[in-house]
Image 1 (cartoon, rainbow, N blue to C red):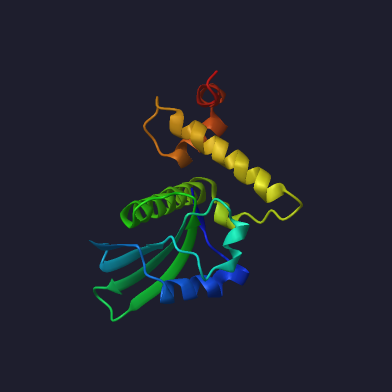
Image 2: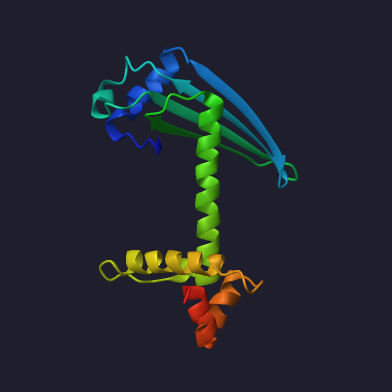
Length: 175
Protein backbone atom coordinates (compact mmCIF):
# COMPACT_ATOMS: atom_id res chain seq x y z
CA UNK A 1 0.00 0.00 0.00
CA UNK A 2 1.24 3.51 -0.80
CA UNK A 3 0.45 6.53 1.37
CA UNK A 4 1.06 10.09 0.36
CA UNK A 5 3.54 11.41 2.87
CA UNK A 6 2.53 14.60 4.66
CA UNK A 7 5.10 14.04 7.38
CA UNK A 8 4.83 17.29 9.38
CA UNK A 9 7.73 16.75 11.81
CA UNK A 10 9.66 14.24 9.67
CA UNK A 11 9.49 16.12 6.37
CA UNK A 12 12.80 17.91 6.93
CA UNK A 13 14.42 14.57 7.78
CA UNK A 14 13.01 12.96 4.63
CA UNK A 15 14.32 15.82 2.51
CA UNK A 16 17.74 15.42 4.15
CA UNK A 17 17.63 11.66 3.57
CA UNK A 18 17.13 12.20 -0.16
CA UNK A 19 19.84 14.85 -0.16
CA UNK A 20 22.58 12.96 1.70
CA UNK A 21 21.86 9.23 1.38
CA UNK A 22 22.34 7.18 -1.75
CA UNK A 23 19.15 6.60 -3.72
CA UNK A 24 18.74 2.87 -4.31
CA UNK A 25 16.35 2.88 -7.24
CA UNK A 26 15.50 5.50 -9.88
CA UNK A 27 13.08 5.36 -12.81
CA UNK A 28 12.66 8.04 -15.50
CA UNK A 29 9.40 8.27 -17.45
CA UNK A 30 8.52 10.68 -20.26
CA UNK A 31 4.94 11.17 -21.49
CA UNK A 32 4.03 12.95 -24.71
CA UNK A 33 0.38 13.86 -25.05
CA UNK A 34 -2.39 16.37 -24.53
CA UNK A 35 -0.18 19.21 -25.78
CA UNK A 36 2.53 18.73 -23.20
CA UNK A 37 5.65 16.78 -22.35
CA UNK A 38 5.72 15.39 -18.83
CA UNK A 39 8.90 14.03 -17.29
CA UNK A 40 8.67 12.07 -14.05
CA UNK A 41 11.55 10.80 -11.96
CA UNK A 42 10.76 8.26 -9.25
CA UNK A 43 13.44 7.75 -6.59
CA UNK A 44 13.26 5.18 -3.80
CA UNK A 45 15.31 4.95 -0.62
CA UNK A 46 15.28 2.23 1.97
CA UNK A 47 17.84 3.74 4.32
CA UNK A 48 16.24 5.73 7.14
CA UNK A 49 19.29 6.83 9.16
CA UNK A 50 18.28 10.51 9.08
CA UNK A 51 14.54 9.93 9.65
CA UNK A 52 14.09 9.60 13.40
CA UNK A 53 10.29 9.49 13.06
CA UNK A 54 10.46 6.26 11.03
CA UNK A 55 9.78 4.40 14.28
CA UNK A 56 6.23 5.79 14.10
CA UNK A 57 5.70 3.63 10.98
CA UNK A 58 7.10 0.20 11.91
CA UNK A 59 6.05 -1.42 8.61
CA UNK A 60 7.60 1.33 6.46
CA UNK A 61 10.15 -0.14 4.05
CA UNK A 62 10.42 2.59 1.41
CA UNK A 63 10.26 6.34 0.99
CA UNK A 64 9.43 7.44 -2.53
CA UNK A 65 10.02 10.80 -4.19
CA UNK A 66 8.26 11.69 -7.44
CA UNK A 67 9.62 14.73 -9.27
CA UNK A 68 7.53 15.85 -12.21
CA UNK A 69 8.03 18.51 -14.82
CA UNK A 70 5.32 19.53 -17.32
CA UNK A 71 6.32 21.49 -20.38
CA UNK A 72 3.49 22.83 -22.53
CA UNK A 73 4.13 22.67 -26.28
CA UNK A 74 2.29 25.84 -27.29
CA UNK A 75 3.31 27.97 -24.31
CA UNK A 76 6.47 28.90 -22.49
CA UNK A 77 4.88 27.51 -19.36
CA UNK A 78 6.65 24.91 -17.20
CA UNK A 79 5.15 23.35 -14.06
CA UNK A 80 7.33 21.46 -11.59
CA UNK A 81 6.34 19.53 -8.49
CA UNK A 82 7.81 17.11 -5.99
CA UNK A 83 5.77 14.66 -3.93
CA UNK A 84 6.80 12.21 -1.22
CA UNK A 85 5.21 8.89 -0.27
CA UNK A 86 5.85 6.22 2.32
CA UNK A 87 5.20 2.55 1.70
CA UNK A 88 5.32 -0.85 3.34
CA UNK A 89 6.00 -2.43 -0.08
CA UNK A 90 9.40 -3.50 -1.36
CA UNK A 91 9.06 -2.55 -5.03
CA UNK A 92 11.21 -1.09 -7.77
CA UNK A 93 11.02 2.58 -8.69
CA UNK A 94 9.23 1.62 -11.91
CA UNK A 95 6.60 -0.37 -9.99
CA UNK A 96 6.05 2.48 -7.51
CA UNK A 97 5.67 4.93 -10.43
CA UNK A 98 2.98 2.68 -11.95
CA UNK A 99 1.14 2.16 -8.63
CA UNK A 100 1.05 5.89 -7.82
CA UNK A 101 -0.04 6.88 -11.35
CA UNK A 102 -2.75 4.18 -11.35
CA UNK A 103 -4.16 5.45 -8.06
CA UNK A 104 -4.61 8.97 -9.44
CA UNK A 105 -6.15 7.73 -12.71
CA UNK A 106 -8.83 5.89 -10.73
CA UNK A 107 -9.37 8.85 -8.41
CA UNK A 108 -9.65 11.33 -11.27
CA UNK A 109 -12.07 9.14 -13.26
CA UNK A 110 -14.32 8.66 -10.23
CA UNK A 111 -14.32 12.37 -9.39
CA UNK A 112 -15.02 13.34 -13.00
CA UNK A 113 -17.96 10.90 -13.21
CA UNK A 114 -19.44 12.11 -9.94
CA UNK A 115 -19.04 15.74 -10.97
CA UNK A 116 -20.57 15.32 -14.44
CA UNK A 117 -23.41 12.94 -13.53
CA UNK A 118 -24.22 14.22 -10.05
CA UNK A 119 -22.83 17.76 -9.96
CA UNK A 120 -20.85 17.07 -6.78
CA UNK A 121 -18.66 20.14 -7.19
CA UNK A 122 -21.76 22.31 -6.78
CA UNK A 123 -23.05 20.53 -3.65
CA UNK A 124 -23.21 22.81 -0.63
CA UNK A 125 -24.17 20.33 2.05
CA UNK A 126 -22.48 21.37 5.27
CA UNK A 127 -24.64 20.06 8.11
CA UNK A 128 -22.89 17.39 10.20
CA UNK A 129 -22.17 14.33 7.99
CA UNK A 130 -24.50 15.28 5.13
CA UNK A 131 -21.74 15.77 2.55
CA UNK A 132 -20.10 12.41 3.38
CA UNK A 133 -23.44 10.59 3.39
CA UNK A 134 -24.54 12.05 0.06
CA UNK A 135 -21.15 11.32 -1.46
CA UNK A 136 -21.47 7.67 -0.44
CA UNK A 137 -25.01 7.47 -1.85
CA UNK A 138 -23.81 9.08 -5.10
CA UNK A 139 -21.03 6.48 -5.42
CA UNK A 140 -23.52 3.65 -4.91
CA UNK A 141 -25.87 5.20 -7.49
CA UNK A 142 -22.96 5.66 -9.93
CA UNK A 143 -21.99 1.99 -9.63
CA UNK A 144 -25.58 0.86 -10.09
CA UNK A 145 -25.95 3.03 -13.19
CA UNK A 146 -22.64 1.77 -14.63
CA UNK A 147 -23.70 -1.85 -14.08
CA UNK A 148 -27.04 -1.39 -15.87
CA UNK A 149 -26.25 -2.38 -19.46
CA UNK A 150 -29.63 -2.63 -21.23
CA UNK A 151 -29.54 1.02 -22.23
CA UNK A 152 -26.54 2.47 -24.10
CA UNK A 153 -26.77 6.01 -22.74
CA UNK A 154 -24.56 8.03 -20.41
CA UNK A 155 -24.67 7.94 -16.63
CA UNK A 156 -26.35 11.33 -16.38
CA UNK A 157 -29.10 10.20 -18.78
CA UNK A 158 -29.54 6.90 -16.93
CA UNK A 159 -29.98 8.86 -13.72
CA UNK A 160 -32.66 11.05 -15.28
CA UNK A 161 -34.40 8.07 -16.89
CA UNK A 162 -34.48 6.24 -13.52
CA UNK A 163 -36.17 9.30 -12.02
CA UNK A 164 -38.80 9.41 -14.78
CA UNK A 165 -39.50 5.69 -15.28
CA UNK A 166 -40.17 3.50 -12.25
CA UNK A 167 -39.67 0.28 -14.26
CA UNK A 168 -36.23 1.46 -15.40
CA UNK A 169 -35.39 2.43 -11.80
CA UNK A 170 -36.21 -1.12 -10.67
CA UNK A 171 -33.99 -2.47 -13.45
CA UNK A 172 -31.10 -0.26 -12.30
CA UNK A 173 -31.63 -1.43 -8.72
CA UNK A 174 -31.53 -5.06 -9.90
CA UNK A 175 -35.18 -5.98 -9.16
